[in-house]
Image (cartoon, rainbow, N blue to C red; front, side, top):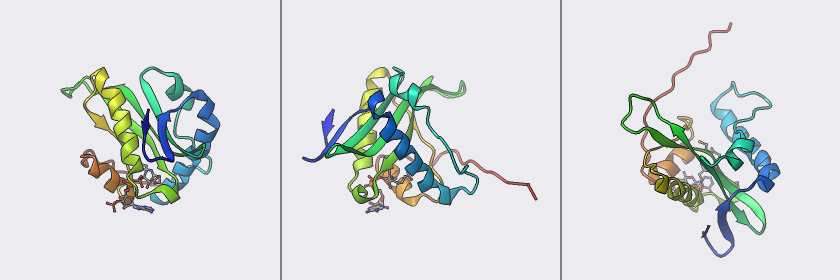
Length: 158
Ligand SMILES: CC(C)(COP(=O)(O)OP(=O)(O)OC[C@H]1O[C@@H](n2cnc3c(N)ncnc32)[C@H](O)[C@@H]1OP(=O)(O)O)[C@@H](O)C(=O)NCCC(=O)NCCS
């Protein structure tokens, strides 16, 4: 797909990447654990079998010397009937290995995902991020994302 630097290559993921992606999924879970005490010890976030083969989704990875160091997906979803757009792109699985952070690699992945969705008529994109995940919020704001819906929760167990 695109070349980020000489040594980092951004490409569409395939089903052969599933094992690596399952490991990176756990890295996202661990990165988010400090933001939500109710994440299960063994949590799974993504339906990779579907995301990797469904024509309504695209998973993109960045590779460095044969190792996947960054991920992301976009899935075309039906929007709420109350909105002016009937479909939107939902972005998820945003992860960059710690040693490669701060180089706008996530930005490159999101741009690649948007470039895949836009010719399909998608120009509205959404994602979820924890309020305290400032590094992620900074990365998304650089691409024009703005805070929108705020999820509120309470745990009433004694
Ligand atoms: C969120 C994430 C994907 C951003 O990727 P990235 O490629 O580093 O993004 P950017 O290079 O655009 O940097 C974004 C912000 O990361 C922070 N950052 C910069 N360098 C960093 C480094 N070396 N290490 C950690 N964070 C760094 C900064 O706050 C930066 O914002 P700033 O440049 O305005 O100061 C990455 O931090 C990550 O994988 N985090 C763990 C998983 C996660 O939380 N995913 C998001 C779920 S919603």
